[in-house]
Length: 307
Image (cartoon, rainbow, N blue to C red; front, side):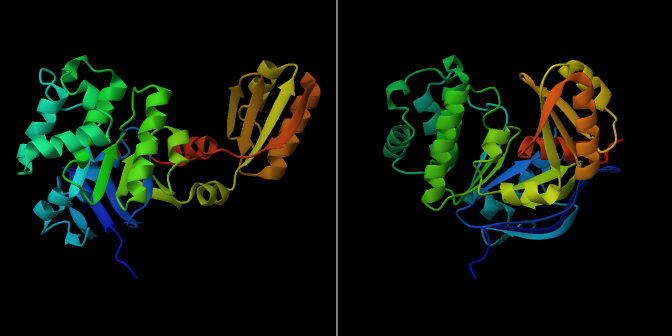
C-alpha cells in the first residue's frame, strides 16, 4: 500500500512540566483533506508545527512525506505549505511584491513567471499592485494561500485559515482546497466551523492534548452514541429550565423557534423530554445528531490538561 502522507505515533510535546500534546497517533492519506478539530488550547497548532518540522517532539515518532520528523525536518519544510492563523505578510508591500519575496526565499526561477502564474491561478492578477495591508480578510486569505502553494508543495497545513472571513470567501476558499486536493495535494486543516469540518474527507478531534475521535463525519457522529430530540411550540424557555440537569440530558440549546436536547441514554432522554413537553404544551420529535452536538459533548467530557 502507498505510504500515508503523514503517519505519527505517540506524538508528545512538553513545555516544562506542562504536556501540551499527549500521545497523538494519526495517519493522513495522500490526496486527503483531513479536518483537525478541537477547542482553543487543545494542542492543534503545536501538533501541526511538529508535523511540519517547526517543533521537535518530546516523545513519539513519525514520517511526513517519507521524511523522519526528527532527523529530516529541513526536507519536510521544503515540501510543505504552512498557513498560520495570523496574516504574516508585509502589509506595506503589494500582493505581487510579497509573492516575489516568497519566491526568492525558495530560490524559484524565473521568479517573474512563477509569480505571474500564481497570481493567475488564485485570481489575484487584477489586484497584483494592491497593498497587502489594504486587503479585506478574504483577499488576505487568498494571498496567504497563494504564498503557501507557489512552490508546489505536496502537503498543505492550514491553521484556522478562515477565521474572521465572510461566508462567501470561506466557500470560495474551500472550493479551491478541493480543487487542489483533486490534483493530488494532501491537506491538513484545523477549524472551528462545523460546516467546514463536514467538507473534509475525514476529521480528527483533539482535546486538551489528546486525540479522542477520528474518522469520517458520519463515523464520528455515529460512534458518539448521542440522541437528539427537538421541542417545538409553547413554553420552550420553561422547558429548557426544567430539562437542564434532568435524567438523560447532557445538552439543552435553543435553535430559533425550537429547543434541541441531547443525551447519551436514549430511553432516559426520551422520558425526560416527553414529560416536560407535556407539562409545557410543546411537541417533540427525534432529530439527526449534528457534528456540533458531538463537538460540544466531547468538549464537556474532556479533562483540562492545564488545570
